[in-house]
Image (cartoon, rainbow, N blue to C red; front, side):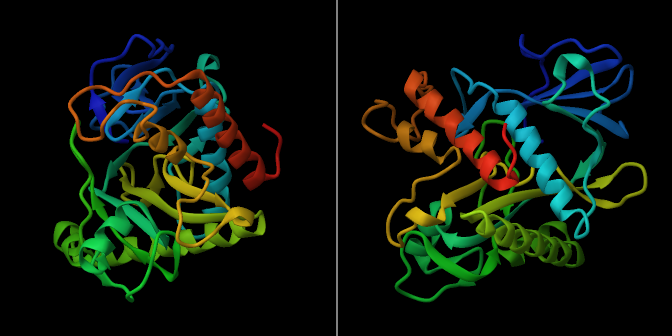
Length: 305
């Protein structure tokens, strides 16, 4: 979990038997009472209703977002369990105060890479392509546009930024230098295998999985490489409705891209890259964002939220 501070925010509840350890952009991390966070073999990950964009935590939060993110991650952990182990120990044996938005998990030493899979060209990948014709060291054909399909999907890692800084896209060769060739190759294989599984499942439900980010770590108990953090949520992925997909334009999304679009519109009055904090999200943006998150959950899982 990318952290922003080790000082608890007011909204981080006190939980019996657990010490608050880290406040992330959208999550709170706890460890068993009186255990060193750096050595904890078990942690409690609590998803809040906070939403972040462009390295800013936004106000207000999105109602039910923490529950939606947790439920979607649980669904995908189950779908991918035969491909890669994950960090979840229990979703039910958690404090009542955070039931529905917390997971008891194995403590992991995280790999310092964001493992991104792209099946469509958009976002920062599109910007890199326009600048130099390649993404993450992958030279792509000419003439591609926003939302062009990439088949097969490509692995485009990025660095994990320190608090207040930006993730930086890097090449696969740079990733091999950073974590070692053997681990980088394993991460690429697992990332693409998980993405293709998820892309197929989503497509069966009328959703295009444009791209997603995975995070991996090694268990502090036995060193097993595990999938951690969140998985294939509207915070870490781009989901598009297949029935409205048109190559060459910005796609309507079921994820937080909707919030990013508002922030960079004239309506917000805010300029990306400025030191100023973004303005509060209007009530209609909050409501529509919640609707998109819930729709993503219901369409992907087939369950009512």
